[in-house]
Image 1: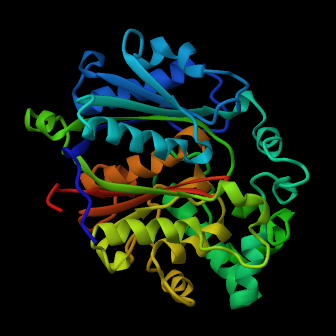
Image 2 (image 1 turned 180 degrees about the vertical axis):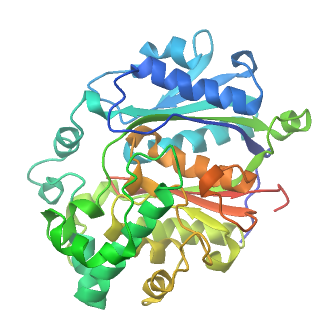
Length: 398
């Protein structure tokens, strides 16, 4: 298969984040977005005058605010500039980066600022999710983001004790990573010797899914600046990180019968197979140096590691049990702490890409992994089984 080719290469040259927390009482939405934008501009050594276009998005209406980009115009610097507003659910942060990459690669713009945010304290997230599904045809979704289906499938396949321990090991691993990231929301100080206690005492949500397994809702924003290879040659404040390729897969059209006679291939595996084949990557586990994965719960994460990395049988469980996804393992997963630690939904998937880019730059601070990062993978996910997968590179020499 012919490898992916762009009209021109695109690099990430600026990354800005806010601290992530359950409530940002000291900032309104405009001020929060402005903080992320200022941080991204400073990181890139640019001013707002260098930006040709703004791409803005969130999980719209979760804050009960329609078209928030119009309110945020002064805070994000879009006043007087061309702007796009994108909402694709939980994937929106990744979709924003994909769209920005396409806008620059096409030659339509040279430099694009993309912004993802959420201020979930101002609305009703669960109410929004459950009311987006038809109560008859989509009744299996009426618990919103809370589902134990994957947990039960894993238990039937690999046994209850092994799966429960694997999920809790993953959850504690994520907390250990989050403890190294000062921007992370939930930093609980969990230890592996607490595994048995947590498995027994954490409040039950649905089936085997417990509160400790599940992501929370967070307030926060992320901004990134993307530019063309020609602009990179003019000089950048920080080393550029190159967007090699990205792929999207979704199955929202048949959500109501997913658990019928035959479960279809997951959108994660479908996305990974197409993306890796197009780029000649035959061994993703060996090729990538870090993986920032969108992991809404520990059970999903355990399952999805096998899907994204195209593993068979129980290989993903064996790698997790052997510590190969730890910071010093074969493929570190979510050095930032992942979605389980921080979930400002409109920014969540963008944070996966931003954190992967920081790892390539060697600029992640306390959660920087020790080995050199040349090739990074980042994913996004949305409630309608919508997957986005992106490859980042240290050098544009693919």
